[in-house]
Image (cartoon, rainbow, N blue to C red):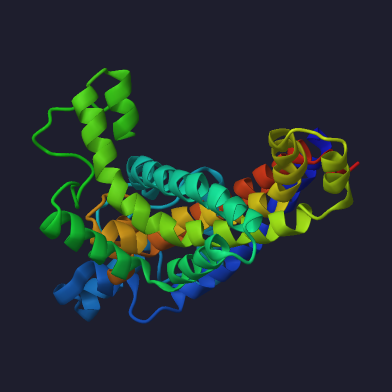
Length: 334
Protein backbone atom coordinates (compact mmCIF):
# COMPACT_ATOMS: atom_id res chain seq x y z
CA UNK A 1 0.00 0.00 0.00
CA UNK A 2 2.79 2.44 0.87
CA UNK A 3 4.50 1.65 -2.43
CA UNK A 4 1.34 2.42 -4.37
CA UNK A 5 0.89 5.70 -2.51
CA UNK A 6 4.53 6.60 -3.19
CA UNK A 7 4.11 5.95 -6.92
CA UNK A 8 1.01 8.13 -7.03
CA UNK A 9 2.80 10.97 -5.30
CA UNK A 10 5.74 10.74 -7.72
CA UNK A 11 3.32 10.91 -10.67
CA UNK A 12 1.96 14.18 -9.27
CA UNK A 13 5.23 15.97 -10.07
CA UNK A 14 5.05 15.91 -13.92
CA UNK A 15 1.30 16.49 -13.77
CA UNK A 16 1.58 19.63 -11.67
CA UNK A 17 4.64 20.79 -13.64
CA UNK A 18 2.78 20.52 -16.96
CA UNK A 19 -0.23 22.26 -15.47
CA UNK A 20 1.92 25.11 -14.20
CA UNK A 21 3.33 25.73 -17.70
CA UNK A 22 -0.10 25.72 -19.36
CA UNK A 23 -1.56 27.85 -16.59
CA UNK A 24 1.24 30.39 -16.74
CA UNK A 25 0.91 30.81 -20.51
CA UNK A 26 -2.89 30.96 -20.37
CA UNK A 27 -3.02 33.63 -17.69
CA UNK A 28 -0.46 35.75 -19.54
CA UNK A 29 -2.52 35.51 -22.76
CA UNK A 30 -5.64 37.04 -21.20
CA UNK A 31 -6.67 40.42 -22.65
CA UNK A 32 -5.48 43.50 -20.83
CA UNK A 33 -2.75 43.02 -18.30
CA UNK A 34 -2.07 42.99 -14.57
CA UNK A 35 -0.79 46.54 -14.56
CA UNK A 36 -3.92 47.82 -16.29
CA UNK A 37 -6.12 45.87 -13.90
CA UNK A 38 -4.20 47.18 -10.90
CA UNK A 39 -4.20 50.84 -11.97
CA UNK A 40 -7.72 51.03 -13.41
CA UNK A 41 -8.54 54.55 -14.62
CA UNK A 42 -5.03 55.69 -13.67
CA UNK A 43 -3.43 53.34 -16.22
CA UNK A 44 -1.26 55.83 -18.09
CA UNK A 45 1.61 54.43 -20.20
CA UNK A 46 4.14 55.69 -17.65
CA UNK A 47 2.28 54.16 -14.71
CA UNK A 48 1.85 50.85 -16.54
CA UNK A 49 5.58 50.76 -17.30
CA UNK A 50 6.44 51.37 -13.63
CA UNK A 51 4.11 48.58 -12.45
CA UNK A 52 5.48 46.16 -15.05
CA UNK A 53 9.02 46.92 -13.92
CA UNK A 54 8.10 46.67 -10.24
CA UNK A 55 6.45 43.24 -10.56
CA UNK A 56 8.73 41.92 -13.30
CA UNK A 57 6.01 41.73 -15.96
CA UNK A 58 8.35 43.32 -18.50
CA UNK A 59 10.81 40.42 -18.32
CA UNK A 60 10.83 37.52 -20.82
CA UNK A 61 8.13 34.92 -20.18
CA UNK A 62 10.63 32.12 -19.57
CA UNK A 63 12.35 34.20 -16.91
CA UNK A 64 9.01 35.09 -15.31
CA UNK A 65 8.07 31.41 -15.25
CA UNK A 66 11.23 30.26 -13.50
CA UNK A 67 10.93 33.06 -10.97
CA UNK A 68 7.32 32.02 -10.37
CA UNK A 69 8.23 28.34 -9.97
CA UNK A 70 11.09 29.16 -7.63
CA UNK A 71 8.73 31.05 -5.35
CA UNK A 72 6.07 28.37 -5.68
CA UNK A 73 8.44 25.65 -4.48
CA UNK A 74 9.09 27.78 -1.41
CA UNK A 75 5.35 28.03 -0.71
CA UNK A 76 5.11 31.55 -2.10
CA UNK A 77 2.04 31.78 -4.35
CA UNK A 78 2.60 35.46 -4.98
CA UNK A 79 0.83 38.56 -3.76
CA UNK A 80 -2.69 39.59 -4.68
CA UNK A 81 -2.75 42.68 -6.87
CA UNK A 82 -6.03 43.77 -5.30
CA UNK A 83 -5.48 43.30 -1.57
CA UNK A 84 -1.67 43.38 -1.39
CA UNK A 85 -1.70 40.30 0.84
CA UNK A 86 0.00 36.95 0.07
CA UNK A 87 -2.21 34.68 -2.02
CA UNK A 88 -1.65 31.73 0.32
CA UNK A 89 -2.79 33.84 3.26
CA UNK A 90 -5.92 34.87 1.36
CA UNK A 91 -6.72 31.23 0.61
CA UNK A 92 -6.09 29.93 4.12
CA UNK A 93 -8.36 32.67 5.46
CA UNK A 94 -11.23 31.82 3.10
CA UNK A 95 -10.74 28.09 2.55
CA UNK A 96 -12.42 27.00 5.84
CA UNK A 97 -15.65 28.63 4.63
CA UNK A 98 -15.59 26.80 1.29
CA UNK A 99 -14.57 23.52 2.94
CA UNK A 100 -17.40 23.84 5.45
CA UNK A 101 -19.88 24.49 2.65
CA UNK A 102 -18.47 21.60 0.62
CA UNK A 103 -18.81 19.22 3.58
CA UNK A 104 -22.49 20.09 4.00
CA UNK A 105 -23.17 19.77 0.26
CA UNK A 106 -21.37 16.42 0.06
CA UNK A 107 -23.13 15.10 3.17
CA UNK A 108 -26.44 16.11 1.62
CA UNK A 109 -25.58 14.43 -1.69
CA UNK A 110 -24.24 11.18 -0.17
CA UNK A 111 -26.80 10.95 2.62
CA UNK A 112 -29.69 11.07 0.16
CA UNK A 113 -28.03 9.84 -3.03
CA UNK A 114 -26.92 6.36 -1.97
CA UNK A 115 -30.19 5.35 -0.19
CA UNK A 116 -32.31 6.74 -3.05
CA UNK A 117 -30.18 4.99 -5.66
CA UNK A 118 -30.42 1.69 -3.78
CA UNK A 119 -34.16 2.13 -3.27
CA UNK A 120 -34.67 2.82 -6.99
CA UNK A 121 -32.67 -0.27 -7.96
CA UNK A 122 -34.63 -2.49 -5.58
CA UNK A 123 -37.87 -1.25 -7.17
CA UNK A 124 -36.61 -1.46 -10.73
CA UNK A 125 -39.30 -0.80 -13.34
CA UNK A 126 -41.80 0.54 -10.81
CA UNK A 127 -42.80 4.06 -9.83
CA UNK A 128 -39.95 4.61 -7.27
CA UNK A 129 -37.44 3.79 -10.00
CA UNK A 130 -39.11 6.01 -12.59
CA UNK A 131 -39.43 8.86 -10.08
CA UNK A 132 -35.74 8.69 -9.16
CA UNK A 133 -34.71 8.78 -12.83
CA UNK A 134 -36.90 11.82 -13.54
CA UNK A 135 -35.80 13.70 -10.42
CA UNK A 136 -32.12 12.95 -11.07
CA UNK A 137 -32.46 14.32 -14.62
CA UNK A 138 -34.04 17.48 -13.23
CA UNK A 139 -31.28 17.79 -10.64
CA UNK A 140 -28.55 17.47 -13.25
CA UNK A 141 -30.06 19.91 -15.73
CA UNK A 142 -31.14 22.71 -13.40
CA UNK A 143 -28.45 25.44 -13.16
CA UNK A 144 -26.94 25.95 -9.74
CA UNK A 145 -27.47 29.72 -9.72
CA UNK A 146 -31.15 29.32 -10.73
CA UNK A 147 -31.77 26.82 -7.94
CA UNK A 148 -30.00 29.15 -5.53
CA UNK A 149 -32.29 32.05 -6.44
CA UNK A 150 -35.36 29.78 -6.13
CA UNK A 151 -34.25 28.69 -2.66
CA UNK A 152 -33.66 32.30 -1.61
CA UNK A 153 -37.08 33.36 -2.91
CA UNK A 154 -38.80 30.45 -1.20
CA UNK A 155 -37.09 30.67 2.19
CA UNK A 156 -36.58 34.43 2.39
CA UNK A 157 -39.89 35.69 1.03
CA UNK A 158 -42.51 32.96 1.06
CA UNK A 159 -41.38 30.94 4.07
CA UNK A 160 -38.78 32.96 6.01
CA UNK A 161 -37.21 30.06 7.90
CA UNK A 162 -33.54 30.08 6.91
CA UNK A 163 -30.91 32.80 6.43
CA UNK A 164 -29.98 33.47 2.83
CA UNK A 165 -26.66 35.29 2.96
CA UNK A 166 -23.38 35.35 4.84
CA UNK A 167 -21.86 32.75 7.14
CA UNK A 168 -23.24 33.93 10.46
CA UNK A 169 -25.48 36.58 11.96
CA UNK A 170 -23.20 39.58 12.64
CA UNK A 171 -25.13 40.34 15.81
CA UNK A 172 -23.84 37.12 17.38
CA UNK A 173 -20.63 37.72 19.30
CA UNK A 174 -18.97 34.45 18.30
CA UNK A 175 -15.42 33.33 19.10
CA UNK A 176 -13.54 32.07 16.03
CA UNK A 177 -10.70 29.66 16.71
CA UNK A 178 -10.36 27.62 13.52
CA UNK A 179 -12.50 29.74 11.13
CA UNK A 180 -14.81 26.73 10.75
CA UNK A 181 -17.76 28.54 12.28
CA UNK A 182 -19.82 25.48 13.22
CA UNK A 183 -16.80 23.75 14.73
CA UNK A 184 -15.79 26.94 16.55
CA UNK A 185 -19.22 27.16 18.16
CA UNK A 186 -18.93 23.55 19.34
CA UNK A 187 -15.38 23.93 20.66
CA UNK A 188 -16.22 27.11 22.57
CA UNK A 189 -19.64 25.76 23.59
CA UNK A 190 -21.34 28.75 22.02
CA UNK A 191 -24.26 26.65 20.87
CA UNK A 192 -26.26 29.57 19.47
CA UNK A 193 -23.31 30.52 17.25
CA UNK A 194 -22.83 26.93 16.06
CA UNK A 195 -26.54 26.53 15.27
CA UNK A 196 -26.71 29.88 13.47
CA UNK A 197 -23.63 29.02 11.39
CA UNK A 198 -25.17 25.67 10.46
CA UNK A 199 -28.43 27.33 9.40
CA UNK A 200 -26.44 29.64 7.12
CA UNK A 201 -24.99 26.53 5.43
CA UNK A 202 -28.29 24.79 4.70
CA UNK A 203 -29.50 26.66 1.60
CA UNK A 204 -26.12 27.05 -0.15
CA UNK A 205 -25.32 23.44 0.77
CA UNK A 206 -28.53 22.21 -0.88
CA UNK A 207 -27.94 24.37 -3.96
CA UNK A 208 -24.34 23.20 -4.31
CA UNK A 209 -25.11 19.55 -3.55
CA UNK A 210 -28.08 19.05 -5.89
CA UNK A 211 -26.10 18.10 -9.00
CA UNK A 212 -23.79 15.68 -7.10
CA UNK A 213 -26.92 14.22 -5.48
CA UNK A 214 -28.50 13.51 -8.87
CA UNK A 215 -25.29 11.95 -10.21
CA UNK A 216 -24.79 9.75 -7.13
CA UNK A 217 -28.39 8.52 -7.35
CA UNK A 218 -27.94 7.46 -10.97
CA UNK A 219 -24.53 5.84 -10.44
CA UNK A 220 -25.69 3.99 -7.31
CA UNK A 221 -28.82 2.76 -9.08
CA UNK A 222 -26.89 1.46 -12.08
CA UNK A 223 -24.21 -0.17 -9.92
CA UNK A 224 -26.69 -1.88 -7.60
CA UNK A 225 -28.68 -3.17 -10.58
CA UNK A 226 -25.53 -4.76 -11.92
CA UNK A 227 -24.37 -6.25 -8.62
CA UNK A 228 -27.68 -7.57 -7.30
CA UNK A 229 -27.93 -10.05 -10.18
CA UNK A 230 -24.41 -11.42 -9.68
CA UNK A 231 -23.85 -15.09 -8.95
CA UNK A 232 -22.52 -14.52 -5.42
CA UNK A 233 -25.65 -12.56 -4.49
CA UNK A 234 -27.93 -15.32 -5.75
CA UNK A 235 -25.81 -17.84 -3.83
CA UNK A 236 -26.14 -15.79 -0.64
CA UNK A 237 -29.90 -15.67 -1.08
CA UNK A 238 -30.00 -19.43 -1.70
CA UNK A 239 -28.14 -20.00 1.57
CA UNK A 240 -30.88 -18.12 3.39
CA UNK A 241 -28.76 -15.23 4.65
CA UNK A 242 -30.52 -12.26 6.17
CA UNK A 243 -31.56 -9.51 3.76
CA UNK A 244 -29.57 -7.01 5.79
CA UNK A 245 -26.41 -9.12 5.47
CA UNK A 246 -26.88 -9.54 1.72
CA UNK A 247 -27.45 -5.82 1.30
CA UNK A 248 -24.47 -4.64 3.34
CA UNK A 249 -21.84 -7.31 2.65
CA UNK A 250 -22.62 -8.44 -0.88
CA UNK A 251 -24.52 -5.70 -2.72
CA UNK A 252 -23.57 -2.30 -1.33
CA UNK A 253 -19.92 -3.08 -0.68
CA UNK A 254 -19.34 -4.31 -4.22
CA UNK A 255 -21.49 -1.56 -5.73
CA UNK A 256 -19.50 1.18 -3.99
CA UNK A 257 -16.47 1.16 -6.31
CA UNK A 258 -17.97 3.31 -9.09
CA UNK A 259 -19.84 5.34 -6.49
CA UNK A 260 -16.56 6.04 -4.68
CA UNK A 261 -15.03 7.32 -7.90
CA UNK A 262 -18.03 9.57 -8.47
CA UNK A 263 -17.91 10.94 -4.94
CA UNK A 264 -14.19 11.69 -5.25
CA UNK A 265 -14.66 13.58 -8.51
CA UNK A 266 -17.68 15.45 -7.17
CA UNK A 267 -15.74 16.51 -4.08
CA UNK A 268 -13.15 18.20 -6.26
CA UNK A 269 -15.87 19.80 -8.37
CA UNK A 270 -17.67 21.09 -5.29
CA UNK A 271 -14.55 22.81 -3.98
CA UNK A 272 -13.65 24.34 -7.33
CA UNK A 273 -17.21 25.03 -8.47
CA UNK A 274 -18.52 27.00 -5.50
CA UNK A 275 -18.10 30.33 -7.30
CA UNK A 276 -21.76 30.79 -8.30
CA UNK A 277 -23.17 29.47 -5.05
CA UNK A 278 -20.95 31.66 -2.89
CA UNK A 279 -21.74 34.68 -5.06
CA UNK A 280 -25.52 34.25 -4.85
CA UNK A 281 -25.51 33.63 -1.09
CA UNK A 282 -22.81 36.27 -0.34
CA UNK A 283 -20.73 33.51 1.21
CA UNK A 284 -17.18 34.64 1.92
CA UNK A 285 -15.22 31.66 0.62
CA UNK A 286 -12.55 31.17 -2.01
CA UNK A 287 -15.19 30.92 -4.75
CA UNK A 288 -16.36 34.46 -4.22
CA UNK A 289 -12.78 35.66 -3.90
CA UNK A 290 -11.94 33.97 -7.21
CA UNK A 291 -14.83 35.75 -8.91
CA UNK A 292 -13.38 39.10 -7.87
CA UNK A 293 -9.95 37.97 -9.09
CA UNK A 294 -11.35 37.03 -12.51
CA UNK A 295 -13.11 40.35 -12.98
CA UNK A 296 -10.04 42.29 -11.91
CA UNK A 297 -7.42 40.13 -13.69
CA UNK A 298 -5.63 39.36 -10.46
CA UNK A 299 -3.06 37.01 -12.04
CA UNK A 300 -1.37 35.73 -8.87
CA UNK A 301 -4.73 34.77 -7.35
CA UNK A 302 -5.87 32.99 -10.53
CA UNK A 303 -2.62 31.04 -10.77
CA UNK A 304 -2.55 30.19 -7.10
CA UNK A 305 -6.19 29.10 -7.02
CA UNK A 306 -5.87 26.72 -9.97
CA UNK A 307 -2.63 25.20 -8.63
CA UNK A 308 -4.28 24.87 -5.24
CA UNK A 309 -7.31 23.08 -6.72
CA UNK A 310 -5.05 20.84 -8.84
CA UNK A 311 -3.20 19.69 -5.71
CA UNK A 312 -6.53 18.99 -3.98
CA UNK A 313 -7.78 17.02 -6.99
CA UNK A 314 -4.61 14.94 -6.99
CA UNK A 315 -4.89 14.20 -3.28
CA UNK A 316 -8.56 13.26 -3.71
CA UNK A 317 -7.63 10.82 -6.50
CA UNK A 318 -5.01 9.31 -4.20
CA UNK A 319 -7.62 8.96 -1.46
CA UNK A 320 -10.02 7.29 -3.92
CA UNK A 321 -7.34 4.75 -4.90
CA UNK A 322 -6.70 3.92 -1.25
CA UNK A 323 -10.43 3.64 -0.57
CA UNK A 324 -10.72 1.19 -3.48
CA UNK A 325 -8.39 -1.25 -1.80
CA UNK A 326 -10.25 -0.93 1.51
CA UNK A 327 -13.64 -1.60 -0.06
CA UNK A 328 -12.51 -4.39 -2.37
CA UNK A 329 -9.11 -6.06 -1.78
CA UNK A 330 -9.24 -7.54 -5.30
CA UNK A 331 -8.28 -4.19 -6.82
CA UNK A 332 -5.11 -3.80 -4.77
CA UNK A 333 -2.05 -3.30 -6.93
CA UNK A 334 0.81 -5.59 -5.95
